[in-house]
Amino acid sequence: MAYKSEKIGTIVLDQINRRLFLPDIQREFVWSPDKILRLFDSVMRRYPIGSFLFWKVGDELRGHVDVYRFPEDYKQGDVHVTDIDTSGIADLTLVLDGQQRLTSLLIGLRGSFTMKKKWKRKKNEEAWQRKYLYLNLLKNPEDVSEDGELGMRYKFEFFENAPPSSPTDYWVRVSTILDYPEFGAFTKFKYAERKKLPPEVAGDMELLEVFETNLDRLYQVIWADEAIIYHEETEQDSDRVLDIFVRTNDGGVQLSKSDLLLSMITANWGGLNARAEIQGLVEYLNKGLVRRNDFNKDFVLKTCLMLCGFNVRYKVENFKADNLKVIEQRWADIRAAIEGSIKLINAYGIDRDTLTSANAIIPVIYYIYKSGNTNNVDEIIAGNLTPQAKMRYDIRRWLILAMLGQAFGASSDTTLTQARNAIDQHIAAGKTDFPSAPINDAIGLKFDIDDYLDVSYGDKIDFLALSLLYDQDNWGLMTYHRDHIFPQKAFRNGILPAGLTPDQQQQYRDAKDSIANLQLLVDTENAEKSGKSFEEWIAGTSPDYRKKHLIPQDDSLLKFDKFLEFIKAREELIRDRLATILP
Image (cartoon, rainbow, N blue to C red; front, side):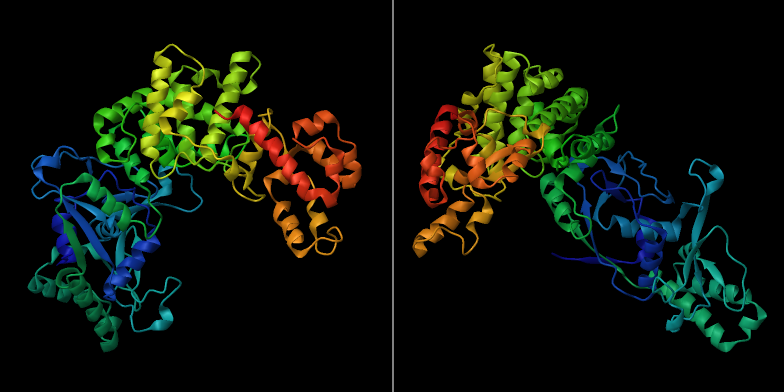
């Protein structure tokens, strides 16, 4: 990869917002004034400020990318961007990596930073001050004792106006240096400034040397050094460029592809603020419901593609203007379907701690959306009527089986498309129930009971596996516990049944956390069990209780010295139970 170099002055004066612009996939400017000061200190110290990545846009793509100006006169906290018409711009080039640094250089050298005064309300116009970057030419960079809190050798500050000169301070506005790209003109400027120095400074040879050295250094780093090192990408493949952008921007705040696609949507939506809508939905799903979730923008955007009938792969071509317009038009129903479906799975007890695949939920959302049940989710959760209770049961059973069977793995995009086709055909045939069997046939869902019996306590799927054994499906609306039928304390060293061989002792310990020794208990059941000895509790369990929790009715198996026989008997009960509910 060949790199080129350029002077800071040339980039800031002749290229930024002339031929260099920002693509809509870039985030807003977020650097603080202190970070800008440190950047200029690094420039003055001739420290490397990192490489940059530019993308030269060809004529064939010029009209298909949204382009923004760099913020030149920046107001603190402002996220507003100004788009431009790219017609007539020669050598249109977009900055893929280096936005924050280039914007900071632009603000310091050609623009301003409007910041809020402390203790003033934002809505008060008097709270805001427009400030410019200044450099104190009398600060000796060799004096390490004056580096200050930011560790800066050069004294940069933002001021509304230049502070008065003194024996220790002579402030020059940094933007002035842009007026003197030629060394001869700069030399005249330097001598003119020297004449303005206070007499006590002009007569002090050491201070005068500091003044001239600092001003010379400012000229050199802006107009002589080629400090901007950049690679210019010329490929016109949008997906390649987007992938490059993701990889080059993951060193600081992690960027996902959805962050970039979200920027594209924000640029194209007219009536709604896409960023606020989608981020607001993610925030609500994760923190606004009864149970806590861990969804992200990737999940929402992929769901948008699914619900609108588009290709679900993350390719730029799937987020073109026409598709984005459809998503915007349908957004209210899309949002309602997502919210309702997450409420439903939360009611099952599936949340951030038990969900193994967010993609597995998307067919459920699609069914809710496509079948017209978007506004009926609360009724489905309540399940007071037979059709709704069956729908709730069918969706829960299918979702758990899909996650236990790892149906949504590496080829999730293909699986989602197949599931969507199956749902479409089911609904087109006039059927209203949840199409578990058609989806399973389409995606080739497989479920291995032996794999199921290998689930152990502490596995991420242990709750999903256990909940599948119960008709009860509102685990998310109560407090439940994953409980060892034979309690863990019974397996401590030294208290296993006498007479066991070493091999049998190991079998006891191996089976302790197996699913055949686990059950789900609600608070009252767990409190009752914990308050009694195991023998007293198990002897007092009713036939209905044992049937519900698949505990063998044979009392002879409930002695600890029969634990291994108990495990085998309960595994058979689990197999029988699964045989009645498997598709």
